[in-house]
Image (cartoon, rainbow, N blue to C red):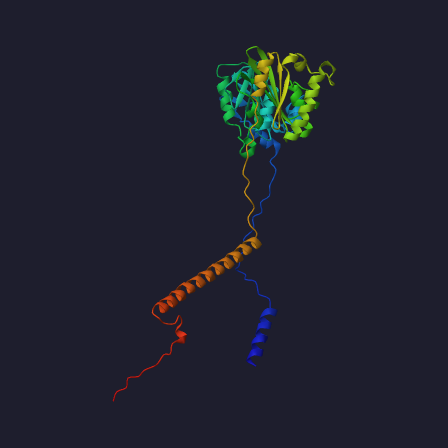
Length: 386
């Protein structure tokens, strides 16, 4: 009966729902929602309202697409992965400063756009990560941002003012802060660093004075190029490096470029002007790993050949950690270990038994007794005395 009563009470407790506690409080659960930042806010954050006495004449003009950021250069900016930008006109003491800031997805895109806009022969300036100037125009890049500034009147302090502006630009982190790796393959001897042009598409390559036809480079296969001028003893030379995803693709494209160079005046399409203006005896093609190098210009063949031989691709190997062992493999290793331990213990016990037993038997034999005590008749003697 007691058991039945207990079961009835339990059933009643289960059937009756718990009454809510009027004093209980429920804490709200915070839900995080990623709200996209408007382009206007990004543009306002990209360029300051005031710096070095320059005051913005109005709100920044946001550039939401490449056509707004660079009329006539939209295709090239898209190749460099333009993200957004802003334009501001500053005023100070009757002078004006027009600034256009273009931000890209990474540092490589910003550097490529900077080399696209920079013309050969423009002097170098010490601003940001790299800068140049053309009269009252200053062009520099910092991180993933390119700044194109035009002064109404240039002054000795203009460069310092641009350095102040460069310090206020956002800096990317991680992989987005890495410069194009192909630049490391450029020989540094006799290099004119103000003539390097980095391209990832046909428009940027042709617009920055590419030597080969864009279709022959193979940008549709993921190629990247860098072109630079060298001041050799016998004359100027132009070195073009084309980086492909794999050495096999580079070998196939090298053969196509060799055939194009060999065709000469019969080549289709016709040689571009930078190639046709070169000394044909100095034009040479060479491959190093996934990189195809082409030298052109007016230097003598020996110097052009030496410059080409200085291109050497170094592959950096990274060790990849092996995946962790599965539970089945761990269990198998444990069982093998246990079996090995049992076998070793058994063998040790047998050897110990043979050693101790054999030693005792030899000792008995040496005393003239049987090897085993089984054959001895033992007596129990009681000394009982009255």
